Image (cartoon, rainbow over all chains, first blue to last red; front, side, top):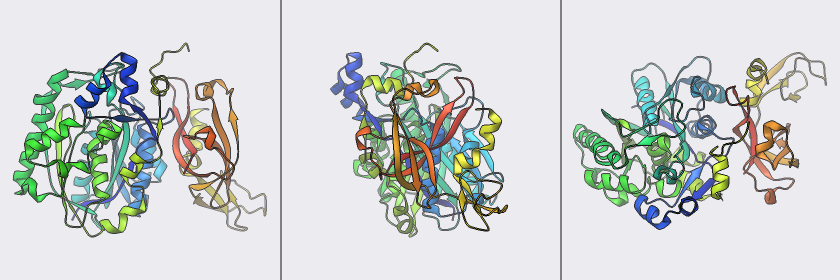
Length: 348
Length: 129
């Protein structure tokens, strides 16, 4: 029985509303809000990045797992916004939680599915008996070019999962990954902002990969959408996950708890992992959870989780995801947002 | 800050590691080689509690060049639950909410960086609970 033994979420307290971004570019806020199904997004403080958020999310995962960090055999951080081009995020994370030096460490990159890549590998290492615990984090402080549609959604957040085989709160019953070479979204080296293929990011990219991954995962498991209490998909906006959920046969109600994008935007590598943390906050023993990520380039990782009795013992030991989202917030105007996100050129 | 100095200070900057004198029990943050209280030379390494309260603070309106973009920012003395007092920045805090006794917790944040190409200095700041 291998699965999640502890989980933690971190979302910065700063937000910007769609209206504030639209006003800057003379765009119609209502059109963006309706089109993207997003009201506001999280913004990292100037002193926050993928590493700082990964550390805080992991500390919350450790609060729930209540294990000695030195027993963790691997630390994997998935992100498309690692602070260094060359120097791992994972080493700083491992050092901050006191898990060094007997540990394997790697950073993962695969657009928005880098977090679930880390989860997939961490699970398999524990399953193979290589280690008792492995840590996987999905974290991002993603950037959208000023005025681009991505600017309305690209946000910040982190989710951390400790995988293990004792006192498991969510057993991983099945996994499946689906991947092709599909250039729907990219950022070339030394470029500050990513570029994307506009509508090409939809049918041949997001929908094709999640749909195929989800269908095969259901076939492998011999289950139907009606067998699941919850489902969570990658959330580049609020609409796509609802549409792909409907294509696969899931209802809005099954998606509601894990659908965070309308309130915090697209946290990229943190997206479906953060949705999973929100589901773990309320899931009951015996519930099945369906999860499929998506990363441009392109691929999807699918997981089926079965919640155990252990969930009731751990979920209250750290802040819950919707409480973080709806808690203390500070709204930024566009000027302060541009400063926070280093979008303003200065003389140096 | 040199790379080697930053590296040496990682245990207390990242993990709030302190030295507790085995002889008299006094806690030092960062750790010391000799206890000024009793002359003891043996210490246990402990991790400080991450919750505490703001003892006093000041608001910086004209900061040194490395911190100029952050003004106005707050620097305060925090008393952690185990009685240890430390100096740090108070982050994510509305200046109107600042008051002596404010409950705070320690978070991992970027402290500074060596220009655009140098290393990033990570460490602790406190934030309101």
